[in-house]
Picture 1 (cartoon, rainbow, N blue to C red):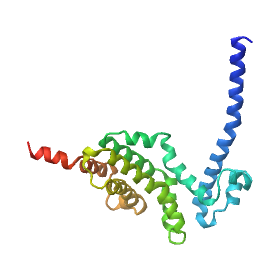
Picture 2 (tube, helix red, strand yellow):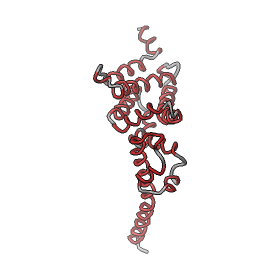
Picture 3 (cartoon, rainbow, N blue to C red):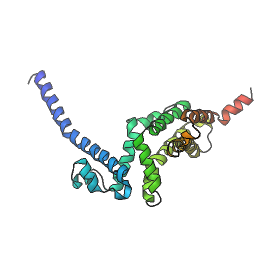
Picture 4 (cartoon, rainbow, N blue to C red):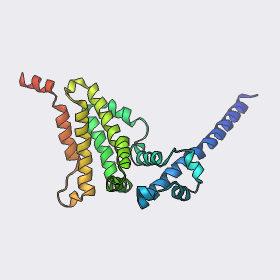
Length: 222
């Protein structure tokens, strides 16, 4: 067989393999997108896998081939509306950034969420239904807040030169400050009463994180 024939044959095989994989990936994504529509329209309690299946144009069994239950599907919804939009390697880029870059990357993340109407609708729904369905709030917290704070904690643990005594608490302060700004400004209509730009919050956080005890000692000794 000639080299050209081998290349054609290999190319055809890869094409076939890709065509076999694409429907699986696109079908899962279609299910998640349908679930987002149903969840934001009907709320957690009224969202059923039958409704999602109808919206996605698949049968219930297809959903079960991708997700164990409604909770697992909800986690996929949260991930679709948050971390997945930044692509693979986002957490790794955070962990290798300078302190200032770390804060600015988080600012960009939260700013995008602040401008995303679907994400804001998701957050409103989670907060509104958290009392009736505490498992919903727990899933959201675990998927987003706890995951983000854990990454931040790991970052501050790696940067001993910053002199952070409690890396987890500092991560909670950084992430919590930005999310508090989002909630106050967008969900509680704070931007109509007392506007606050996320960039201003980020600037204060950069200053806070950069003020390590070691650097203060060096400065005072000069």
